[in-house]
Image 1 (cartoon, protein in one colour):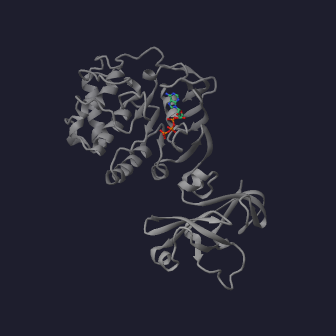
Image 2: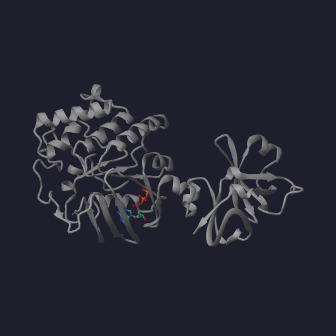
Image 3: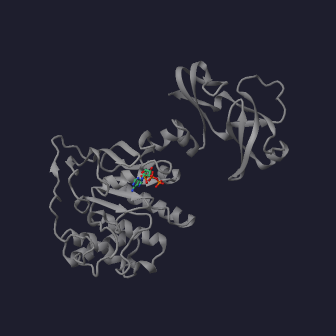
Length: 394
Ligand SMILES: Nc1ncnc2c1ncn2[C@@H]1O[C@H](COP(=O)(O)OP(=O)(O)OP(=O)(O)O)[C@@H](O)[C@H]1O
């Protein structure tokens, strides 16, 4: 999320930007609302269900978002997608910061369509924390409960308990500038959770952290999300964050849901090139007849699955074996003549992008790359065992 966002981490009292309050009384004019606002009690839905039930339709100039999201309490959904797919727009629509052109947004059976953002039972955690700089960690966290009408002493007590849960008791009196990125992110999470949201929104919550802190905070966030009893929706570019933190992934491309499922299911059965690249698989569409799939891209692939009709076939780059010369004795199955289009280091492997009869990625060791004298333009033979391919209905 890069534009027009509110400045606080607690969507229940999401101010629209600095200035932050002068104190923690929630009356400092930063958009906080000390008393329950009109509309805080949403209208009852005729068919109450718990959790999230939303169809978000948003028109923004040339961009059209139309996605359906459903989640039960306790679910963590990750919205994953390339730049410009509409993830942030979806999150802003859930927070009430971007109006719906059409559709609906129900939470625990109540419609939020007409509920203003500051009155929604929604907590938001942004990637750059957006804590009030001149309030202590404790007062930042106490701000949300204060805005919900909780007394100052009670709000501070609750805030102290949240900081304790986050392992931050020792930092309760610190101002945000004295906190590390990981600590600030945990304060932001405590601040959102302290309002007891029924929907927790996390916008790239780990993106601003360095790699080491990210690893640590990812683990902590996973534990806190596991304990969170309402719906959490996370926006991320990072497949690892999505896989580790979410129960279910919703992949968005061009404003539409292109695939949704558990991380394991999506990793195993990608249905678009974007997802296949994300999970590091070669992916093709084709038409199966028993164990042979005629790929739309040209050649045939032999698979172990016995299918008929439109299918996807996937295999990992590590399953590809390369030869400089046509391997003698090898059957013609799953053997393609290719040319190296590009090479890049990928962990401790070299990834070769190949063009030719079939475009594919192959991972080889550095030693093998040297022996094969791989270089852009080099001719190679690529082969994959049927056992290492995976076909599934399209
Ligand atoms: N204020 C705006 N007015 C008009 N169009 C906008 C506005 N903000 C975003 N868009 C467009 O809406 C589309 C979706 O943007 P959005 O930020 O939701 O995508 P995203 O998936 O979050 O991308 P990123 O990962 O880059 O943050 C883009 O085509 C973008 O250009």
